[in-house]
Length: 169
Image 1: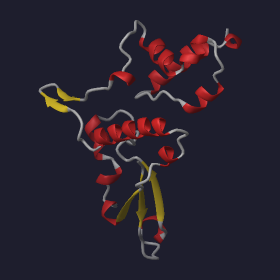
Image 2: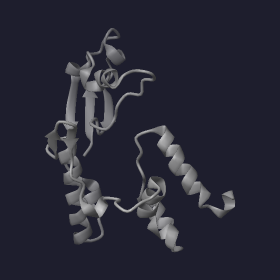
Image 3: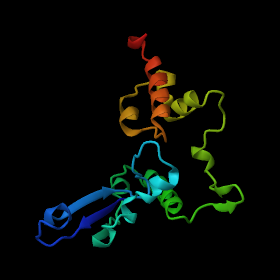
Image 4: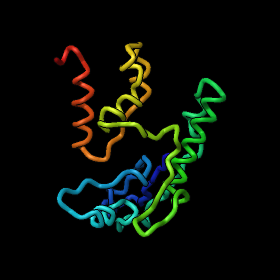
């Protein structure tokens, strides 16, 4: 689910944003500031909910998952809802267990990539398996994405995928 922040102001040029109502959207559990050459703690301290402006925001939470409503079958809708609920429970801190090495979250077997030699190739094969079987891939590419935690990893995945394109050889 996504949250919406609305910044409420009075009409004063001395107010932040010149007194205008500003709307921010996104999943604020996933979006961190990009601050070069600082520690993880400094990045966390720069999040929007730790801003001096936070008390002036009104948090509105979207409660209907529109992707689930547009699903073409009840079984697919059920799978998407189960996955969406699992992701939300992780974000809410209701999934996993603490250990002396940190948090441990159990990944369901149906989304776990467990058999691999090259992790980049494995995640690409699992995500875009039709590419590797020679079938039509147009719909698959539109509906899937690989998320990566660093730009370096994004570049590695992009380079691998581009290496599969005969036009790039």
